[in-house]
Image 1 (cartoon, rainbow, N blue to C red):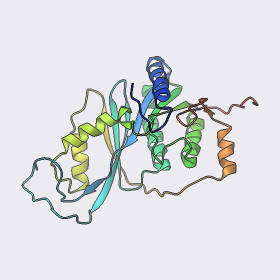
Image 2 (tube, rainbow, N blue to C red):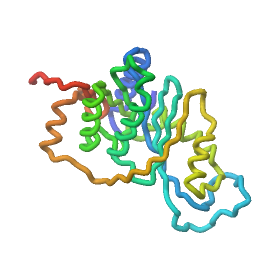
Image 3 (cartoon, one colour):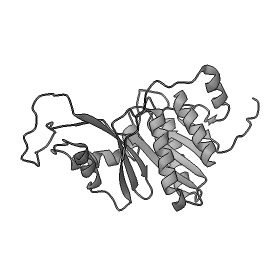
Image 4 (cartoon, rainbow, N blue to C red):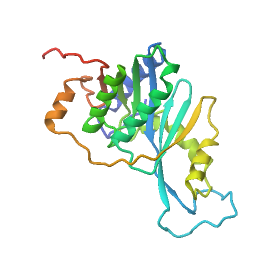
Length: 250
């Protein structure tokens, strides 16, 4: 089992994940998704690692990129179905939950029996369980869809164990040495990436997002009354009911 001195709960987190993930995969009413973003890609004639596949000479200076694109993925670990969203905007809490909402709207007819989603996440700044806007949007998503949501986080410095990370490694190898000199080139390489037998889709998101959206302490306290955190691992495992439930006092 992975271990680290960075935080004392690492082993406990992995022990809990080793229960949560298989239970989700085996339950007919539960769907497990793995979510994460990859490093931003500079779009332009930039030299990349590996042997170039084109005759076009890559720039050997650090010029200003024409644009940037950040990949964000949603993976079904059990079937290897993969959707990659590319954005030139900020990957904010709102962006992340909007993509989850889009994904569910597009795919929900495939899963009529599903009433719960388990989300495997890292603990990034826009997606961690104490991020006020992220929690707010996740509660809203649960209420709108009437899905129970369980947030299951991998600990810091261990995000490589999140299943979506396999996709980023394959994508990086696929376009290694390529000149990603246009948006079309970036999307094209993502579409032709060799992936496992599951369904794959690539989507360009053109909506703009701004960082810095936060809730007041009072608003956050109201949200906290609607979620349940696992004792001793409060930051790492959070349950959000799809319908409003009153917590028992104490």
